[in-house]
Every structure is written in C-alpha cells, then in structure tokens.
Image 1 (cartoon, helix red, strand yellow):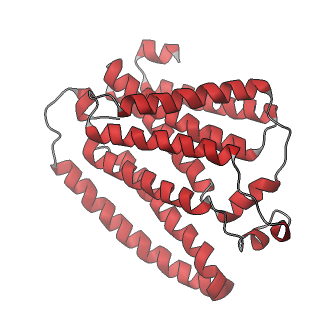
Image 2 (cartoon, one colour):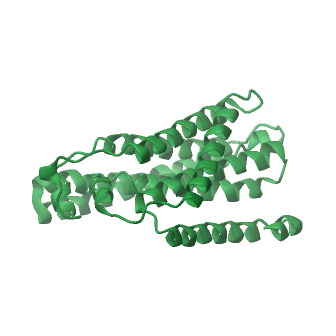
Length: 276
C-alpha cells in the first residue's frame, strides 16, 4: 500500500486494498466465527472504507481516484452484506449455523473497527466543513453501524415450533423482525449511492446502485409472489418482470448519464466538487 502512494497509482492501491480484504476473510475463517459475525464485520468495514475515502479527499487532499478506490470498495461491502441480510430465510438460517465462540482477539479488532466507524461517521456528520449531503450520508452510516451492532448482540428468537433445519422452505413462513429493516436500509443505501453518483458526475456509483436495485426487486419478487403463484407461475412472471425492469432501468440509466455529461460541476476545489 505504501508503494501505491509513493507511485501515485490508484490501481495498485485498489489491488492492495482488495488483498487486505481477502486477508481479513482468511483471518475470520481462522477465528472460526459464525457467518453472521463475518457479515456484520464486513458491513462495518465498508463504512470504515467510506471514512477513509472522505479522509483522503477532504483532509489529506489526495487526487480524486484515491478516494474513489476506498469509496467504491466500501459501497460494495455495504451493499453486498446488506443484500445478504435482506433475505428472511438467511436471517433465520444464520441462527442455526453454529461455530466456536469468537476469540478475544476477534472482539478487540471488531470493537476497534466499530468504534472508529461509528465515531468517524458521527464526527463527519457534526463537522460543518463537509457539505450537507455528505454529512447526512455519514449520519445515516453511523445509524447503520449502530443497528448492525444491535442486530448482532440482540438476535431475534424463533418460536420452538419453527426451529427446523436450515432450509428456506421451513423458515420463510416465520417473519424475522429484522428483515424489513434491512430491506429499508438496503433501499436507502441504493438511492443514496445513485444520488451521490449524480451529484459527483461519477457513473460507477450510478451503475453499482442500479445493479443492486434490480437485484433487490427481482429477489423480493420471488420471495413474495412465489408463495402465491407456485414455481412455474413465479418464473414466468419473473421473466416478464426481468425484461421490463431491464428495459426501463437501462433507459433510466442512459438518460441519467446523458444529463450528467451535460451538467458541469461548479468550479470549486476538487475535494468539494467530488465528495467521494
């Protein structure tokens, strides 16, 4: 990572950050922790990467591509983990996937990451030097970290008669109380990322947000309507929905990108013109 800064190569930096994230995955595997701990860990790690992006652009005054590396990877971590937790069957199934209790070393790393992510998000939200949209965004990320901690330490309980093997067929009838909240948080993160891409003229944010929006709509369709239409009916309807959704989303994406190309960002310092 030091060589990436020395050479001023954002591609080298991106490869190193990805390598560090992969190494953390290996460390979590060696700790033999429960999957729910790993998912929440990477969600908070994504918020931490967003903080690093703001630090590079606003404080350290690095070129925009350096902050973009952290913000894109951070947004990907937040969206992927939030998307996984938006499934009712996954939330219920995680309760029955047992592993050894996390070691003290894991809790130390997790606690430091939690405090840095939450404290940094609150700090940016309360700092007037950041533009209002960024302050609101990190205020929301601070609440996301807090909710993830509540979800981890206060899991929902399933009635005894619903405690079946880890299969979607048995778990889908029990509504996990956290499921709706995770779906609302995912929708909010997607909309925020698309708006961020629009205001910063960064099409990669828009493309990433629209991809997860399409994934959210399709998966919630099969989660809901497959219960009423059966397998064949739900797949026929899902195919029609996928075609229509793809058509309208691609049309919306192209129109939005055209507007972004025509719109010029006001002349101001790079850190302010391109927040993340």
